[in-house]
Amino acid sequence: MIKNPFKFLDSYEKDDKDRFFGRSKETAQLYNAVHASNLVLLYGASGTGKTSIVNCGLANRFQTTDWLPIFVRRGSNLNRSLLREVNRHSQTKWDEDTLLRHRIKELYLESYRPVYLIFDQFEELYIMGTEGEQEKFHQTISTLLQAGLHCKILLIIREEYIAYLSEFEKIVPPLFDNRLRIEKMNDRNLSKVVLGTCRYGGIKLTETKETVGMILDNLRNPREGIDLTNLQVYMDRLWRRDLERQNTVNPTQVTFDPALVQQVGPMQNVLSEFLDEQMEEIEEGLRRRGVKQPQGLPLEVLFTLVTEDGTKRSRDPEEIIEDMPRNRQLSAADLAFCLSEFERIKLLRRFAEET
Image (tube, rainbow, N blue to C red; front, side):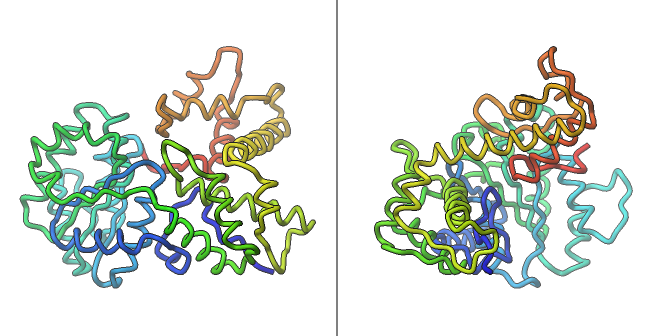
């Protein structure tokens, strides 16, 4: 029996180095950038795999003794999340008013490893954060850079939000001095991803050139190119469709061929099918929990968690319930069930200790 090798909606992690392909050049550039400066700005369009380049590519250029990575997502407040993550890595129990620079200095002395503060999806600070939250963070980074600590800062942001950094640059003038843009992959590197992942997963490709070409054509957006997340989702669907074709859940061989790719069709069909299947499954779960009219309810919950431009946003349960249509009755327990299901299918990343 072989296992599904595709990451679906997850980013690549350090342990995925044997199935991470097509980004060796960008990984080398980032490795050089973080050695050249204590502040690096990594940006690119959504779906270019910025997080994977850091979590997997960059992480595997270091020995464990060479760096102490601390990954920070905004949650409900970036400043609180930063403190929480630094504290989580430290053996010292700090007084509440202990300055961050002192905590990071002590953290370095505990491990004798340079501290890397990695701020993923940094645009969330400007999409959802208040001016006060933004100003406090800007000052914090300025103070850390001036303190001469063994600490490096890596900001990962979608390129369409670069203009939001103008106030940040006023406080930290070197903000744009050491930046790296991640481009969309070209067809040559995309083919490497397909071929390499199939080889890693023991998947047989027949009529290889035609099959790979059809996969890329079904994924291609004429204006935006190919999204790497969509590539993983599409390959996952091919895997599942071949299992259906074989009528098995424990395959000894999975095969991708032109007939299978044609059967799966274009990417928009795959996303639509996936969302419909998952929403129906969650609705059935709500029905078993005693919810009388669950149809469409999970999708309405999901809509409250997405901004107008398609960005995920963090919401308190009370806010979600308040934003639901008035004709929808949703208990806190049923909302928790929906959120846990979204997490299970990788539609939502939870922040357990945000508040």
